[in-house]
Image (cartoon, rainbow, N blue to C red; front, side, top):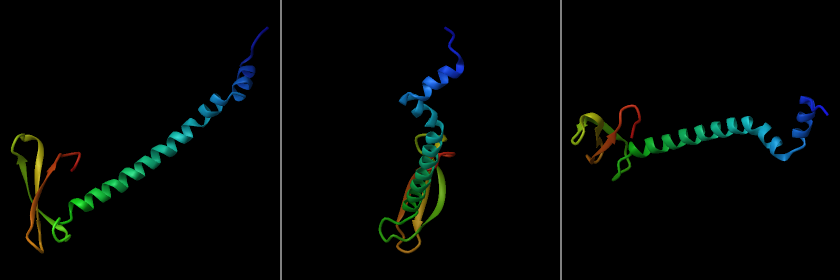
Amino acid sequence: MTILPSDIAKILERTQIWKSLVTLPKRMAELEKRVAELEAERAIKISSAIDQCMKCKTTLVFTEETNDPAFGDFGLKVHHFKCSDCGFTTTRNYTPGKGY
């Protein structure tokens, strides 16, 4: 008895696992798109929270970038912010190429 490729395809089409595997590339693409959308939304929320004064909720103004005391020229930077309304100052660690 010879089993042809078309016979194997017919058998596979009847199995539940094969049905799941066939739809996997489309499902993966949809999930990857959704994850990218969620990450973008999160980045916007984080960005707006970083830019907001913790005391009066006004937008903070970036004033300067300095080297991290521990790492010097290598790695982290320190970003300094000041509130234009209440004068509150704060710093954020910043990794070049990655952000806050």
